[in-house]
Picture 1 (cartoon, rainbow, N blue to C red):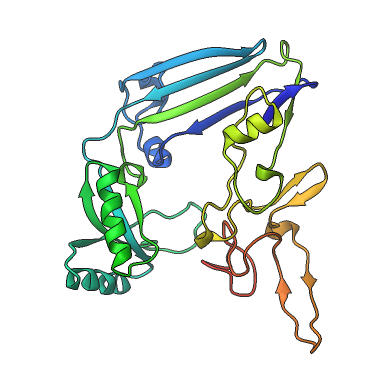
Picture 2: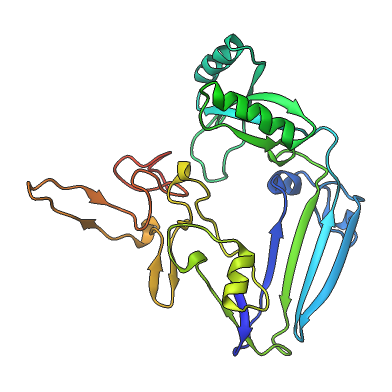
Length: 285
């Protein structure tokens, strides 16, 4: 989203800098204990706020709350498996190759997930104070034939944490600001992504925020493809959600047919799940 001159509008945006927000909020004390603080983590955490005026009627506030947890560290995710037996097989292979893996149960599920029990098991290697050390181990694992590894920070796993959280608030006063709020697609097309700073500079925006979820890497589909559906100036961009689907087909010279249930995305993968014909990780909405 970007702000330009021309139309009155109101915008309040929160961009959270860490994961684990859901767990932190559900486990938080009564909100009256915070006394003007953000209800993230325990009451009394250090919190700073800085506000600047972008233009008359538009203010930007940056809130930094909490501090890095002393229990968090960098590690390398080697694999995620739905059952423990499959995760233990990978763990055994890692041990045979001289590594010291661990298998961690992932218990959390989405509120609308109909399944019961753990959502899966993570196979991880290493505990480091710096990302550089974890990246070095990841490179070693890749050289040994382990594909799809990634460096992660355990403070972003979604459990209880002291932060830090970074909250950016862009506020527009409709009584003072005469401008527009306009959507803008990264690179103006799907696929590929574009940094928010690049979009802002390219469009001459006064301010800009991220406006939705999209595919990050090729393992999840087409980078830049939107989750659900988005319409920009009357033109649909990205793949459709189930409630707004249509049916398309292409007929080959020999009469073979194949269902097409997405737009501008990699066949077999759909961000946020849902679809037909063998979509990964699931066809369920």
